Length: 426
Image (cartoon, rainbow, N blue to C red; front, side, top):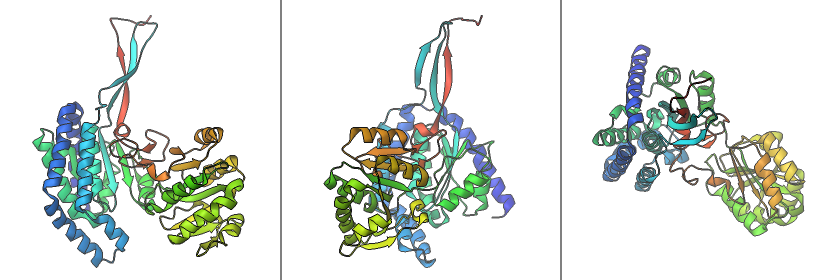
């Protein structure tokens, strides 16, 4: 597709999305919920057909030499599709926040002032790899009364087309415009450049993928971007703590899954519990093949653990998002040094304290400058579904508009509403 055709295509998608967004904003909660339930029905009824299209992407990915973990992320297994269907049903069952008026206050003049939650309008989403993101984004868009333009990775184009077709079928069968969810049908990279530079049609861009993609979009976009660049998350083991619980949580935070952005990449340990905690967690990590890159003090303790893979940490290790069976380990004086380390080196995504000291927990919650801050829980919980948001469109480390897992409310805005009875300003 040449540049002229790509420009025409993206303009058409933008015009259609803008028109559809006005209809979506007016749609009733019942109609939107019906569309989501119908999408769940269609996903379950089309498992075999979706896997046929998915197989084309998988074959092309393997022929291109894509690493097996990346191929795995492309798979639309029956289990993945059932999870998508359940996500749609859970969203359908959640309260509709659109049109909700909050914080209504009577003013001395007699007027009442509040805020109403409204859709953003049109969002563009650019994502890589996992085709199930098509359903997550589409379902959140429907629930929040928005229109969206989705641009998935070229490696999942056939899967994404098949899923988007079902979404549009569910919309039409529910009385909503098909153009409320549109997939960019070309793998031409120029389409991304066009999508992020259409403020006349697109109100916000949400990139979901690797650091390179997000940096490029943040740099070149002419519309606001909801983003996160890294997931350099930390677990801090405090003095005092429940050692057995701390081992269990620190293990889960790192090894439950290595590739997500909410996996812990740094382990900070208070000096008072290091001699007891580090050999215990070191044995767990050694058994699972996790490399530990430690400070001098941590290495001295971990070196005695049978089978432990230990190396000296460099300055860069404290900043690193490994997305692999590697973790940085540092012994710190206590909660103040842990907070200072996190605020300096982390990506402000998700950080946790494991402690039995209530005051330390409160201090950590107040002072750690991250989108999610946890007490006595695994960082792997930083997720829209786990937070009860129904689903998420991504996790934002920005401080404006949305922060943390971005669910329905993150795809809305607030406008002021004033209720009066003939009042005039004196």
